[in-house]
Image (cartoon, rainbow, N blue to C red; front, side, top):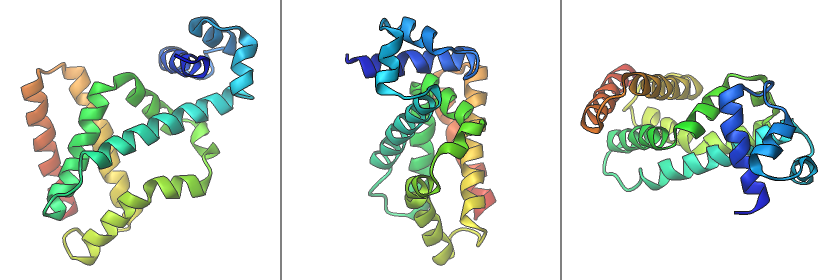
Length: 186
């Protein structure tokens, strides 16, 4: 594994455990097994590292969701598969998902360029616009609908982790929670 990836892995673990401000760069370098100066070779500041880690995780998560949720016959099936893919990814990548939650509730989110945020959300927004245009979902602002869907995803993930349910029960809860979400937006 290259040094940059070692640093990202160490930062992920430590940021989730100790928070952004409670994790000095020297601890990240030590955890990664590299010299402190090596961190600054790849990232000019700790803030840059935090944002880079978020962008990396978020892009991998989005790629997973879209790869596992395409080619469905109906709009509802497409939305459901994206919802399921998000939650299953979150369960399989708990540390990364916790970091994304942590980041989204921090001032670091403001450091993501608006154009980058728009580009990453465009496929979801386009899908929601299509659902509204086709009169499948309620004609609410797409950013509100997206917030509702993503909040449901984060909330159900937290519930599943807290309950420590077996896989079959997790699947049942995820499916039932989608139906509740679908009833809200249609």
